Length: 68
Image (cartoon, rainbow, N blue to C red; front, side, top):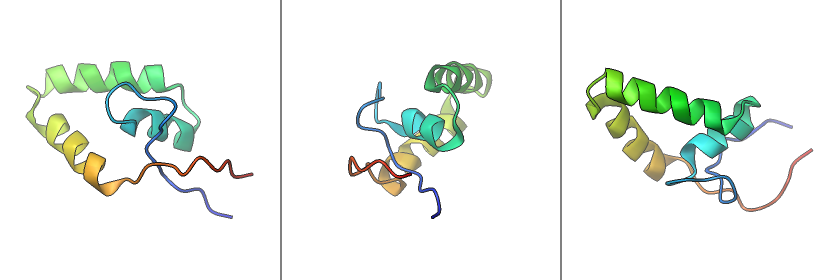
C-alpha cells in the first residue's frame, strides 16, 4: 500500500500543509515549521509563500482514516 500526502486536520497551525508533510515523511512538524519560516524570511517571502498557497489548493485534507 502506498503512502498518500494529505493536509492534516489534527496537526495544523494555518492550513495543515506542514503537519501533513511531517506525517508523510515521519518528521516532527515543528521542525518543518521552523525551517519553513527561516526559508520564508531568507528568500524575501515570495517563493515559499507562493508554494504554500499552491499546496493549499493541490493537497487534499485527510479523511481521518489511519492507514497501516
